[in-house]
Image (tube, rainbow, N blue to C red; front, side):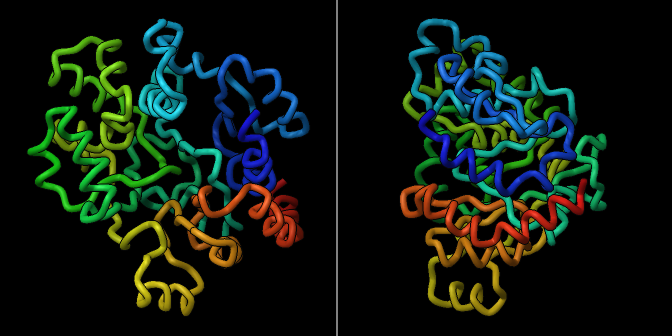
Length: 304
């Protein structure tokens, strides 16, 4: 399993954050890797391996099965609502890990701080990513053009950013139904429309809800600057003074080096960290986690 080292990092850091959520952690893998994933999860009763076709059986259709793994995981995120029973679903990628939950964990991502992420009709605190960089000018612009929602994008100065993200399952359904009607497509046509990265799951979710006039029904926006921790010298200096690059209420922060990873893990102001896996290896992240492992063990024991 190509992402097994990153999965080990998730298992080492996320027990206190994820073990009490409904369903725990579902590790989604191709059918061919299911037995390997199940072996890796022995000893972690809060984590279960499932096949990618569990969420998107359409992947068995030949032309959809030929899509890249990168795009398949986007289909899984957008269409998981069909198999998820809770009101909300948290999506993580392999290079995401959990911080020590001093910032309230997942509860801080919901209005009123409810610890039960299945509480109905509780709007989500969502950190927005500015659209003035590559993310907006390329990725979101390309998605808007493919989905024929350029006008909706033009009215926005920020959008849903990177994984991990907490989404509304009802919101996913609303967005998908709107997009199918808007484009005049059936489900398979829409899925195949995204081949070669022509749209992304979060762009489809955000733009679909915006265009349907229902975004504010499910989300409360938090505008806290770029989620990559800020690349300017000023933002980097402020991050060093505060000990973190992100504000409370946001779900995650992105780190680009081991020092930033260690700092964010210790502060724990946001529950999740996205590691830039082009600059931080799973093994390097594991060393930092091992150094902090007594703290994780203490938190884990306190929650049992």
